[in-house]
Length: 343
Image (cartoon, rainbow, N blue to C red; front, side, top):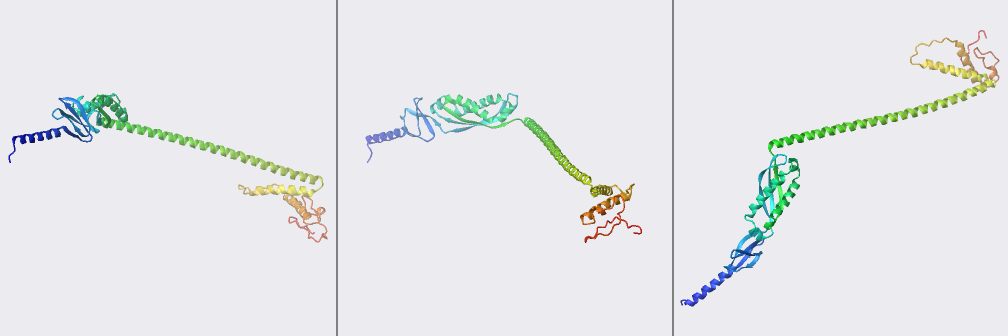
């Protein structure tokens, strides 16, 4: 059955309504914002999700990416304050906070941010010396971030980070810096070596000082002990002399004979033990030594039960012959007594 003219019109109206409805429905993906223009003038911003606009009256103006984005800043030549030429490049991170300002306050937003960052790199780095430039990248980044973010604020853009990627001085300047660094390190090595040598000499001097002090203290202690020993020996000698003097005063001649014979014998022993003595000349009478030893023998007879002091031989001569003792103890015979002639 052929369609009537009225049916065709109705179908056309339905299709037109459907098309109009679909043209007024706008879906905004996550991370984006769309601006809406009515007769060419900005009216509002569409958020992510399903949105409705007036068909044939409103239209989508700009589709803005509101996620954080990165821009690569090209390499450029920078002349520092001390007239050193270096090459520097950077990277900038930004995020759109106001889509309407970013769309209508500036044209070519990314190009504007790149050129703004490049000019500020030349300004900030050109106001610094080369040594500060190479050793203070954090300060450069902070200054660049503050200046660029302040300049981009009217555009509805937030500059989150600006980082210097590389600073490349010329090759001849790099070689000069390497030589300077080598000289500085050699200088520090020499200074450290000199300080070590000085400290070693100080320590050796301190050790020698302590050693000398200890040696002097040891010598003082040894001298003190030697003097004390000599003092005690002198006291003993004085006591022995006093005892001999008392024995002589009491009429005991054996004591004086023993004392003299002992000293005489010690002197002769010392002469005989001398390492450089080969021949000993004795311009003295042998009978004196024999007589002294005879006095020692008389004392020994008295001690071991001999005839007593009355049978002691006189000093300096042979013992007188006497009658044999009736004591059961055999008489002590002096080995130095010579047999009497025809006795």
